[in-house]
Length: 84
Image 1 (tube, rainbow, N blue to C red):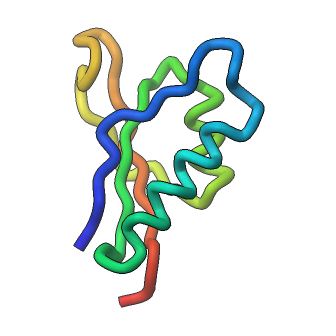
Image 2 (image 1 turned 180 degrees about the vertical axis):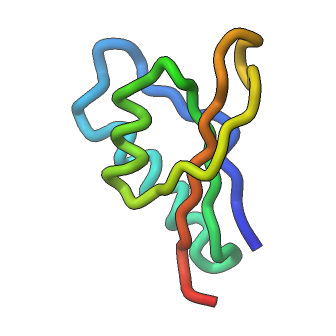
């Protein structure tokens, strides 16, 4: 029913150049035929990634403690990819 993107990263100095948008678009396109939902998580400290998720229609639906580092929560974002 859904796909999950475990890790996505853009190299320092490469942000705000469209790489993240291309990665998210590719993720969604890869799932369209097989999944209705796309889920991904990030890091609370990464404000630009959180803003990008919102700009691309993802909704924060929760958080999980310490996916990458014990002291950093991982917000979880969801997006419907195709209707029911």
